Every structure is written in C-alpha cells, then in structure tokens.
Picture 1 (cartoon, rainbow, N blue to C red):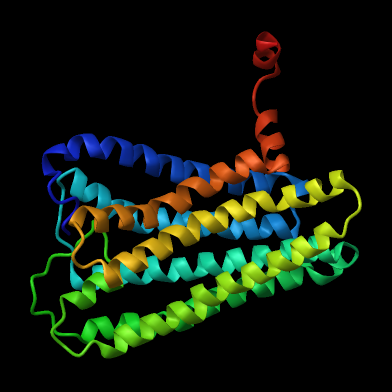
Picture 2 (picture 1 turned 135 degrees about the horizontal axis):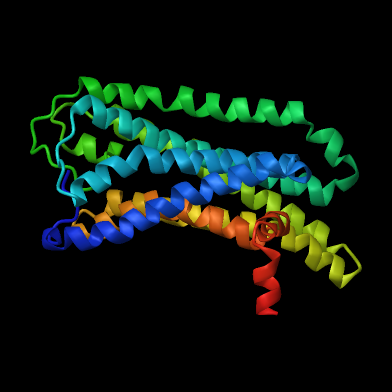
Length: 303
C-alpha cells in the first residue's frame, strides 16, 4: 500500500485527524442507529432507510480503517492478495448499496410529497423490508463476477497500490493478463447502477418539484422542500466523490499521485463522516431526540 507518497515523515501527525475522523464515523453512525431504534416516533419508512444508510456507512469505515491507520501508524504496508480482493469487494459493494439506499430514500420522499394520502399504504413495513433485501441482492449478485476475476489475473507489474486501501482500478493496473472483461464489466456496472440511480433520483426530484410548485401556500411549499434537504445533501456528498474518483482513475493518469490519494480518501471518508452530521442537524426528529439527552440544568444555566 503506497499510503500517502511524499508525506511519510508526517504520518504520526496525519494519523491524528484520521483517527478522529474514523471515531466520528463510528460514533456518529452508531448514534443515528441508536436514536432510530429507541425512538418509537422514528419507526417509519424514511428512518428505516436512514438506518440502512447508517449501517452501510458504518461498514465502509470498518472495512477500511484498519489498513489506513496501519499505514499511518507504521504497523504494516503489506496486504495479501486475498485480503486485498476482499476489501475491494466490500468497498465497491457497499458503494452500490449506498447508491441503492439513496434511490430508495428518493422514492420515499416522492411518495410522501406527491402521494401523501397513500404513503402508509404504499410504503408498508413489509415493502420496506423487501426493498432492503432487494438492495442487498442487487449488490451481492452484480459485484462478484468482476471481483472474483481478480483472483485469476497474473500480477507481474510492481505490487504497489496507489492508496491505503484496495480498489478494483488499482488491482487491474498491476495485472499483465487480459483485463478487458474487468474494464468493460466495471464500466457497464457503473453505468447500469450508479448512473441509472442518479438519473432516477433526478427524475424523482423533478416530479417532487412539480408537485411542490402546485401547492398554493408558500409556507407549505417550503415545509415540503425542507423534508428533502437532508437527502439532497447526502446525494451530493456521495455522488460528487464517486464522479471525481472515477474521472481521476480513468483520465488522470498523468496527474500527481497526491490527487489520486486525495480523491480516494474523499471517496471513502466523506460520505460516512458527513451523513450522520447532516441528518443530525437537518432532521428535526433526530435533532430533538439528541437534545433531550442533554441535562436540563445545563440548558437553563445557559439561558
């Protein structure tokens, strides 16, 4: 694992913010899950999908933290091929899970705003569970063909990955075998999943905006749009790093290694870090529950 080329002397200092970031990732997503589990008023489809998102972000952190911090702490920069392939599977598989969850959340917002009277009958607990199972099946069935193929490639080029974790794009660069299947399949997978999901999310928000503009009251329009702010922020936080990393890997071969490292870490760290913060700040129900955990005496003292 290359880690952070040119910054080796700063590893002890870099490990401090990375450790803090991962602590926030783990604690923040666990907090969101705990709030949803313990607050009966949050037992509804919107927050079930949010719980799926939090679990996905938690798994992303757990599947990458050990190699990143291992490099920064000087414990190990080597990883076996099998472990690298497994990490690549989890990283890319969880990305598709997160994209699918964001699409499901967009559908939830569409039904809540465009068909509010039928919301409870359309998104029942049984249907939410089926959507969750479909999301897991989608990722677990689509990802393995391209990941399993990595095991049978011949790696004759320098065995140095450009990040502190294993990505599919990095692994196929080390191979001397025919990688056309991996390249074509990976591109088709991105188009058929991430691109399709983003287009469907865009379409859902176009329909939402059309319905909101038809509401006569300005206050009601703002209230309806405010329920979508958190989800829109989560969509941007996820898709912008994905697009940036994809462009850098495919068209940025002559860019500085620092750019590749930066985009790779943004892709891994930013969504799991920001999602619990976004929903804790922007979602009134979660924010209200967290506020009730603070002692009333401290609040009265401030007043």
